[in-house]
Length: 321
Length: 284
Image 1 (spheres, rainbow over the protein chains, first blue to last red):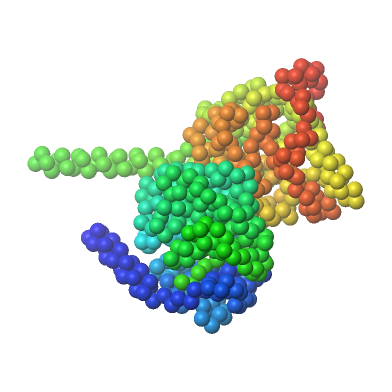
Image 2 (cartoon, rainbow over the protein chains, first blue to last red; image 1 turned 45 degrees about the vertical axis):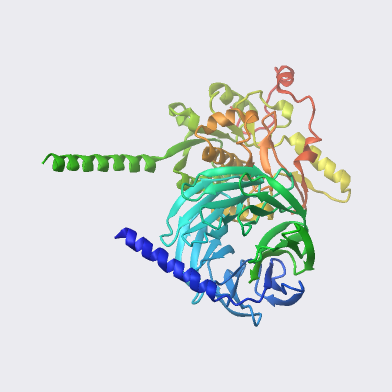
């Protein structure tokens, strides 16, 4: 009976994923949160020009897009809310409270938002359509990075001060594994088959590869650069490479997935933190905080093709494609 | 008939196994943190903050940190899961180090100089000596003649590297700003819990800090903090001028100010007949 229920839930989830994906309205616009500019810069994905700057509240950080592409979400940390932006009209259409100090978040294929609430040491689950709190999950101190597996069955949350990656089941919201990782884990990303999760640890300057089912660390790699304080991490579309924002090293590191060997590094602006990859995998956007700019990288050439000045201290980035 | 009885026995056996497993995992592992110092100090508040945070981590890993009374130290059987956080004099630390050679001792008060420290391989110094602090201050003032800054370990207005969050948590719990002393006690417990999360024998690891990188920990100072050969925690310092942070001094820069001859063996002979205590804190 339990198996049938689980299969049924998985099926519902798959249908949701399909329906949501089918409804994406593609503008190609790039949404960048400016942490100290209290705004979101909107870039045209073709011309790389800023076409709008939207005031969203104090200290905007995480950015995400609804599965159907109709809404852009921005975590506004000091105001303790999520601002919802219409990606076509480019205006804030509503806000909702989302606990203390929201930072990073991920959008589930069913539309729910999983947010790390740094000060409360919890991850919260919200339904953005009505702003209702669905659940809270107790995690370690200073939770930050949130990633949802592509199959929608797991959420990974990093807790910075307790050096843990929590792998949490969906929809049960039970913690399945607590994995001790390097000092100050910042971000996580799943492989496309949802079997592997990759974590960056800022202070230990490590990339850690973890088996999702067992919670075992499969591999670790150091970025080998004293200034490298890795933050965001993304997996290439074919799964063969990892893109890592190197923080104060002012570089993007490209690692091959199997052995976590560094293949290349691309110089970008100062204190690079945020990353977003276009859906076709050919363009990588980075937020270069201290230089107040976004770098646009051609992933085929592995070179910066453009830099775009945005607001003060850009933090998060998401592509509406 | 046999099958039914067998199944019943098997079920009972499995229930017992499950109970044992559950009980075992619920018990987890306990660590004793012995505080040697006054409970009216900032050190005590920092220690409590550290233990609170260690237990926040511990609940996910089935580890528990408890404050053990100093008077009970002799009755603690498992010394491999015990540390002493000492806010006492260097002379007292020296005696403790001899009496409890298998217990790591975190010294959280500053010694006057590296030379004034007792020579023991189980004392870990969380703070640089007062001499180093003075040298850093002098260096900064030489580079900034109009300034009146002083070197400190920590400041309650420090925001970078999630220091703001630690300051906020501490102030909420202790109802006062985090000081050098409270940061030091917090750091000692944080360091220990970080090692305990990664190792089954954290005390053993702490007694061989030069041979392992497992000790590198995040003290909310933006870099991996680790010990040098004299068991002093290397860390960036802050320059505070007029109540505000005006500069951060890197580990590399501070290392250039260290004496080359502060080797323990050399110093042991030199200080043989000298009072090792550089402070006047509760001498024993």
